[in-house]
Length: 68
Image (tube, rainbow, N blue to C red; front, top):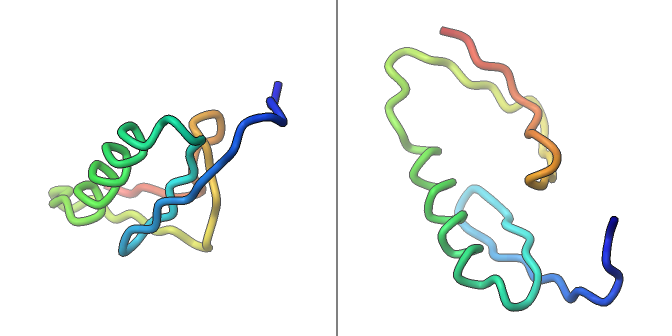
């Protein structure tokens, strides 16, 4: 259940928006670093297509298809 008293911020990277609540800046920085690293990762022939801009959370997987 959502807590209305939480204050949220957004960390913007070159390819991602990381939404987090105040007090979790260290976690947001880490997630942003991992996301950017994954964006540039060599996936050994895997093709990932992100078919639209999506906003997601840890509770909701991103919309994408993976083909090997």
